[in-house]
Length: 410
Image (tube, rainbow, N blue to C red; front, side, top):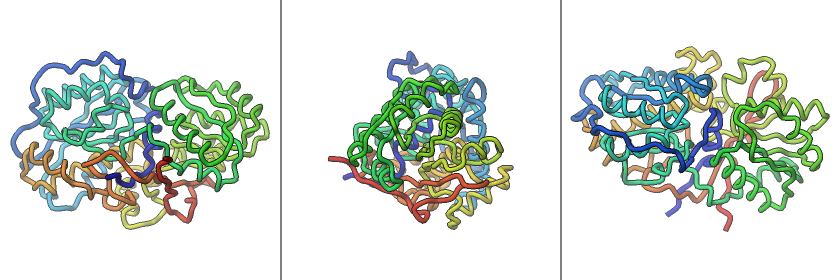
């Protein structure tokens, strides 16, 4: 049975926020040595929860918010297990697959954590170790790094976002560009497997909607702002819309180049929504009119769930309370762990948390996702994204704040 999914491709494309060769099956990672450890026994009064993210290397700047997001969720928690203390233990992936493996081994073998939150674009370097030698440690996080282990439903990895499947093309992207009045769409992606696959799936949806695909480039180097050839390619192809699977640093340079050339089309970015963009006056000025897709309900919706998220982030030091990608991933990983602990029992063992979550399909991050994220399947019968346009000094929701959804193309 397929289940509804939200922004499957958009979530995966956000992995391009760091200099990642996401999902590469060619990495020499190994499974590492040592036993599972991970705290053993039951959670008890104080629980050590590891978090794997980039603390150094080129990915560190983008990933800085992940720890703040997780800490904000734990600090705001007021549920069945709120009399317990949650201690966040950090590990650095060093912006590499090898670093992710070393960081995971540290958390399991040295820090003896009870559970682990993944906010690493290089998690595929650690996933073989975590699902074999450390298979008793429950791991929570998004599947946007491309590790194939996320697709299994009988292991210790639990998805805090929908698992991408680039073999399935959804109607949503094409339908959205049609609604925006586009006729010819250019596609820009990074030279990474996940970015290229996401671009291909998006453009297939666009063609399915009857639109033309113009200039396409899927070999952009990570973090590049040398966009002159891209601007010329888009202009020469006559494209009146651009679909990207790149980070917003590169997108921002591309938008600036297109505007300087007098282009006035529709530009859609899967990354950039969040406080980091709003904190940069030049980025806000250049980004006017850019449309951003988002996997979860944006805080601008003003729901009970988004208001709680916004307040918690503001309390943690995020002035606007608008979560960036990594900040949201830290929050969702922590929230799914708390949910699993409540479902299994506050004194549950690691094995009980794992076996309980393997059977659950109703976690929706307290309403931040419009539909639950199932743990029993990675096949979805619908794909949805929220879209917002940057206007003035803030993001304005499109489609009356409702998600824009599509079904698989037969």
